[in-house]
Length: 212
Ligand code: AP5
Ligand code: MG
Image (cartoon, rainbow, N blue to C red; front, side, top):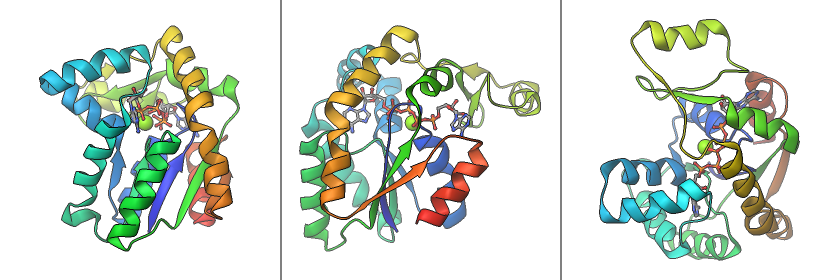
């Protein structure tokens, strides 16, 4: 299975990709996560990416393409992958198409996770990541048991630098302007599948699996 998860910030791409990865044993390839790792390592490139990401803007296409082509070359990606947060511009989508054509492994589908914009803000401002397990949680939507499970084990609930209202506003604008055109891009290629990504995490997952 080679798929793209397409959707606005907070639509649940990371949450659903992790569930699918555990279930189907194919890797989640998240450019956001890989870029955050580079930032944490504090390399010169990481420092450049840090200010772009904190402003909610996009890292240059050629940079993410380099990261993706290296990642898709790894042995664990040979039987499939879930792309999360890539492509995000028409140029990235064209580059991905070319890369996969060269590899002889075209994409199966691009799944659009459809969520009302009002819900996104709450999901993003409430998002926390458990420092111990990396589990995605939410102070508004996760159960108290789930949140306690992290803190009782000595973990911290970390908030992402770009999850403040101002940056979220810009990320949503950037999404509308640069990434939304990909809906048409994949529709024209007959690869687009849209799922309703509102409701509980399990309900959305059920719809995703059915759509695939
Ligand atoms: P990235 O990390 O990809 O962020 P994003 O696209 O803004 O998406 P998010 O990770 O915020 O949302 P998500 O859809 O994964 O939602 P999640 O599952 O976490 O990118 C960050 C930055 O990196 C970009 O701004 C850019 O600078 C750079 N970048 C990355 N890729 C790039 C690229 N290709 N090109 C250029 N630059 C790039 O869920 C959100 C919250 O909601 C969580 O708390 C979760 O618990 C909760 N939640 C999820 N589903 C539900 C549900 N059904 N019900 C209730 N709560 C839910
Ligand atoms: Mg994510």
